[in-house]
Image 1: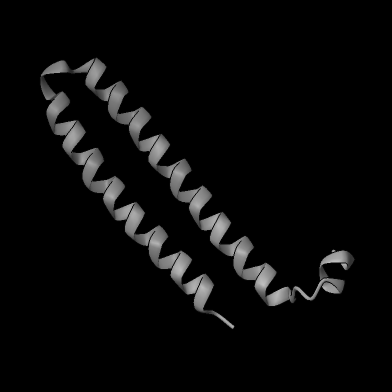
Image 2: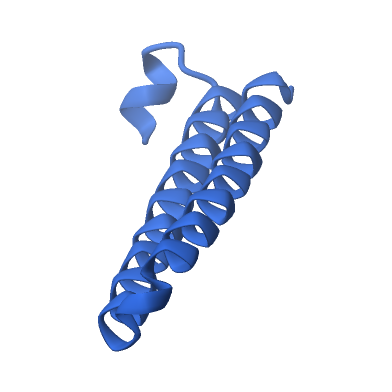
Length: 78
């Protein structure tokens, strides 16, 4: 950490990078859980698999939008 400060990297820039990384990791984790649940539900009730897939795609898109918003907020913050 002290080496980063000597190199001219401020703590604000480091905080922005960490915040954006956490947002991206959380989105990836959430989408993975949605995919797992969708596949399990489709295996239990194959006749409803199309419905589960469409619901998973919609929820994944909403999570991606929230992640993108969080990353933009992290990078804009001072």
